[in-house]
Image (cartoon, rainbow, N blue to C red; front, side):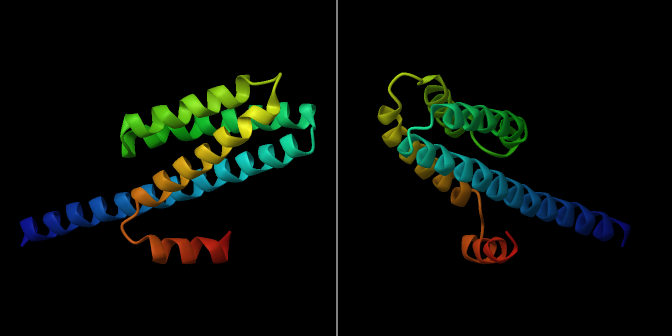
Amino acid sequence: MTRVKISIAIILSIIITGLFSEMYIYRNCGKIISTAEKISHSVNDNSAYDTAELCTEMQTEWRKFEKTASMFTEQTKLSEIKRMIAVISATDDNQADIQPLISELICTLDTLRYSVMTCPVIFSEFFSKNA
């Protein structure tokens, strides 16, 4: 009977860890997507100061997220997003050129966001109501 209880405890801990990691990735990708959309609007408004400030904010959010996300997802997915964020943050002169890159970043983050989820419909409905 003790073995059964230990097995159940191990299985439950694996399931709970998986669910919390999915929620963590979903929420943090959403935060970075939100910041990227703000950068896009800032670029459209030709506000260089706001764009630079938002790029710094996005880099900070990414650094916090990347450390934990690297435990739950493949490094190749994360390295592509890291590259795009670095290019967006480094582009100061010609801000109009970063619009396609911002769109690509948002699509890549959205793909990552839904690729790790076991039930994307349930989680997206839950988070859209509570966000």
